[in-house]
Image (cartoon, rainbow, N blue to C red; front, side):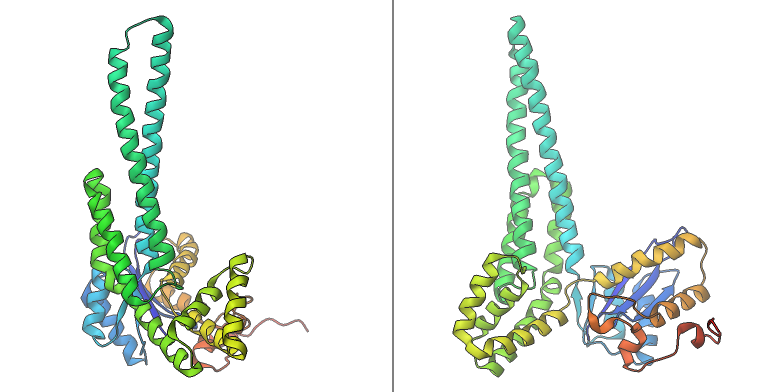
Amino acid sequence: AVSASVRMMRIFQAGRPVLAGVDTDSTYCYLLSLEDHRDADTWGVRLLEAQAQGFQPEATIADAGKGIRAGQALAMPEVPCRGDVFHALQAVQSLATFLENRAYGTIGVTANLERKKARLQWRGQPLRGVAVKLGHANREEARAVALADDVALLLVWLREDVLSLAGPDHATRRELFDFIVAELQARESLCSHRLGPVVRALTNQRDDLLAFAAGLDRDLEVLAAEFQVATETARDVLRVEQLAPEDPLRWRREVTLRSQLGNRYFPLNVAIAEVAGQTVRASSLVENLNSRLRNYFFLRRHLGPDYLALLQFFLNHRRFLRSERPERTGKSPAELLNGSPHPHWLELLGYDRFARS
């Protein structure tokens, strides 16, 4: 399974970073370490310690933090570190939101000047000063609205075509990614302080962000050979699988594929759904862990390694009461990881559970 190893910082008042890692299949938290630094040496040491305990991931997923990536390169140079799609899309989304708000602001300025001009006209007063300002405001509004619309459209393409699970092949995604970055860069002068950092971040992270697509291509090629279909046909099945059940387009496409594949459609669909479930693009599990940890950190503002170790033990051995994935219900992350049952987490700590007589 792919393991997501992502930094978490500033999650309690002391300001010290907590390094954390979660296995994507079992949700087992294999690292929860309070540190003084989050640099390459610290990450490298902690990953080496995890390796000594059997940590052997096929790949990891992390954001663009230099410390974690440099640390993994030192400790596990043969393991690829994929880019976290969530943070990349979040950066572009923040940019789009900022530009949209700025565009609305220019619309408000233009509307105020038009009302002022109307009042002056009604009073028969000179309009020269207001007319000049209104002309300038109209030009600023047009530029701001056009820029906001363009970036919003580029964001949709990036999210739904380039970085989506059901998309084109890896080579096509790279071309589309480069096109989007080039379009953003061409507009950088219109809002350099917000567009510049996003352009640089996307440029530097392209290969890491699209690494999942290369693996997905290989998996689809294997399934296509196994079921004796074209790779693009397998990709079409994946596209249908990712459409919402209430989407009418899903059923029209599925009918076409069923007539084309016959009795091969159902087993191919099941196999592709399994591949889709195992293709990880984001560090969502660590973000989820982060949100859960904040509740504990709020109650105890000053934490030490002992408390974190106990908290990690609890999270790994507490069984899921419910889950969107049925195979997790009634099992703990530790049981999902090693396939073996264990007693209640309180009993593992040496306590006797209360039971009514």
